Image (cartoon, rainbow, N blue to C red; front, side, top):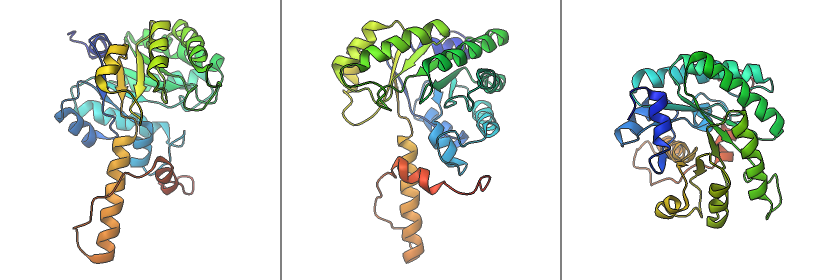
Length: 272
C-alpha cells in the first residue's frame, strides 16, 4: 500500500468492501482504530452532538476543523470527514472549509446534495477538486446523493435519478458515490453497474448482509450516526438511573433515536 495517506485511502476502495465505523472525536477514533478500522471517518451528526449542536448544518465549521485536526494528530490512519453540504450554498466557501480540512491532514470528505440542486452540487465538487489540486492532495471526494434518503424521485425512478446525478458528479470531480437509504439488492446491483464510481451504502435495517454486499460490488459501508446513537442512549439511561437511585446498575438501554438526539441538542444559538 502507498506511503501517503491520501493514496492509502483511495486504494482501500479498490481492495474489496471498506467498512467505516464512524467516530466523532479523538477518543472514539482511537477506539475505532483499536478495534481494527483500516481508516477513520467522522459522522456529521455524532460530531455535532458531541459539541452540543443538532445535526443539519448547525455546527460551526471551525469546530469541525478543530476536531478533525485533533483526530488526525492522534491517529496514524487515513481520515475522511463528513462536511454535510459544505456549510454554505457558496461553492467557494465549501471549498475553503475543505481546504482547511486538508491542511490539518484530512484525505477524504463527504459532501451531500441534500435539498439543493445537482447543479449547485457540481459547482461545489469542482471548487473542492480545484482546492485539492492546489494542495497536491489526492482528496477522495465522496458525493452523497440523497435521492433515496429524501425521496427525491418516485419509486421505480430512483436508480435512474441516482445514475444521472452520479455521472454529473463524477465529471465535476467526485471520487465516490454515497447513497444512504439504498438497500434493495437489485437496485444496488443496477447502480454498481451504471457507474464507475465506488458505491458507498449506509448500514440500515434491511440492508443485505456483508457477503452479499461484496458480491453486488459495494465498495464502502458506513455506520453513519448509529454507533453514537447507541453510546448517547446508554449515557442517558445510566444518568437517569443514577439520578433516580444513586446507583450505577442501570439495565441495558437501547440506542437514542436520531430525532431524539437532535431535539436534545436544540437550544439558543451559541448555547453550546
